[in-house]
Amino acid sequence: RLQAGAPAPAGRALRDHTGHLWVPDADGEVRLNSTGVRVDRDGNGMDRDWFGAADQAAVRDVFGFSGGASALRKAALDDVGLLDESLFMYYEDTELAWRLRRRGWRVEYAADAVVEHDHSASSGVQSDLFVFRNARNRLVVALWHAPWPTVVRAVVRTTARGLFGLRSGRTRREARLVLAALADVTGHLPAHLARRLRETRVASVPRSAVDPDA
Image 1 (spheres, helix red, strand yellow):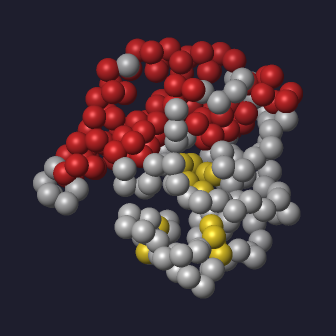
Image 2 (image 1 turned 60 degrees about the vertical axis):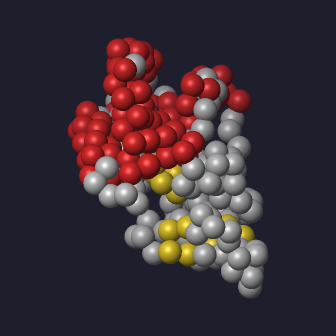
């Protein structure tokens, strides 16, 4: 859950998946942060029920888990491995969910397990670290795990975001970081493709059978 306390400092206003702005205020309003993680057809990872009412019901089955609050079976981690440290921050939970799903493991939302989360407290949603790692890791995880159409859409979307962003002074900094992320992924493409092949070899469930948007 997201706990609203004092008024949000600059840069801490948040938006829901439709773009509506929400600024925490002093009345203590509580919203959902996540009931699990899903991935759309463009490779974007997102919290399911982001900004939903705190008491709303959610389906138990979900593609992935939020790294901010989860309990994982030791047997599952023995099977697929731990979080990938090369991702450092952002999408590391989504990447692990892909490995779990492709080995036949399930992820479930536990409605009675409630955690209060200070969203993006480590880096902020507009910091250089967030923009770069978020853009880079989205592409990396798609390359490792997603079907090729999703990979293509992710690359096109990232390229367009960077190039169009350069036209605006307001978004130029962010655009440069996005293009730097794209260059980083491109520069290490052979290694990412090799990782994709390794993941295919150890998986027991084909990519086409996994619904990351669940």
